[in-house]
Length: 395
Ligand SMILES: [Mg+2]
Image 1 (cartoon, rainbow, N blue to C red):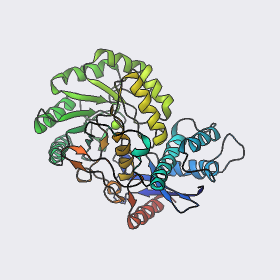
Image 2 (spheres, rainbow, N blue to C red):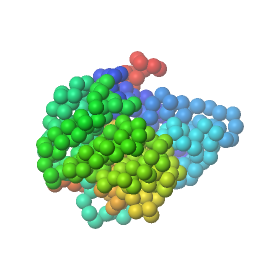
Image 3 (spheres, protein in one colour):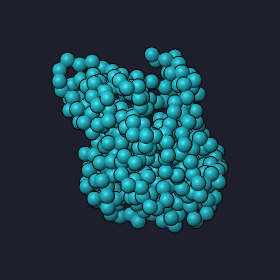
Image 4 (cartoon, protein in one colour):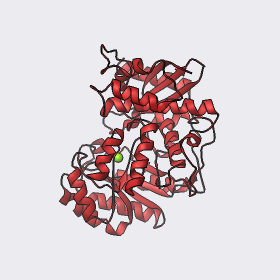
């Protein structure tokens, strides 16, 4: 079997809000075609126009080509060989960042093809089924620009998430720093106010995480807030410091009783080795597309296992990434949760409408995926609508 064509779909939610800080309102979806008629689907969490350029760009010499020209004609059933060729052939522009994120979408599609070719869900090709329950956490970020309204909406969504069967929820509590959503700015004490409200709404038996999205500009400032949260029984604090401050992370981990998590932007196992060995992070959070696809995510899981760390993947896209995370979680016992943007508690039409997926919660746990491949199908009408919305913006 040979890779015969790669289609790139740049998609935008027609209702997108330029003031929101949400990567769920655009998307790059790739369809990898084969000469035997099988088609695989993948996506990645990256500016979709940049991703399309990484895939479609031509080149003039062997160490700096576009991804598509490198992988056409290769065997789609050997994702590791495709990954290695693409990694080497884009070395001058790639190795990290956008090129690897775009490669992640192609790799995801190859695993979809492998599963479909074998007639098996992808997880059966990745490893052994874990014996404990597979769990996801509900990720909550209302798009509201005033503090009281944000707290009320967060509490309402947290209650809804619990009623949907989630055993864990994560509140975005970002009132400063680069991610301050919808211009919502407030003192650090307001984070504590929000988290206290969520904890009292969901009770003591539901796990609660917080994502502050790089809000703190020093270890001391992060430490002060985390000390104030000691009674809230938080499962982890996500990205308290800027991601390049790995020495700061190591200090924070040494001084904190709450687990510290990061890694949503990282590409390749090499960047995760830095997070684990230099930053000493308790929890690493590969985004399966951004890290370089399932091939590279598997390597990160192995790295984390050998260092005794937890893996909790970042997922902020559509049902495609969610399906990929569910497949990986099914074979990864040191993955206590993966991120889950539930259609009932999110703002993105892409998440709600682009694909039909089968990831569902029964008795608080995810059922192992059963359909061949990733188990998702594109809704062609929505694909066309979201493509048109992107073309109106920038073709
Ligand atoms: Mg985050």
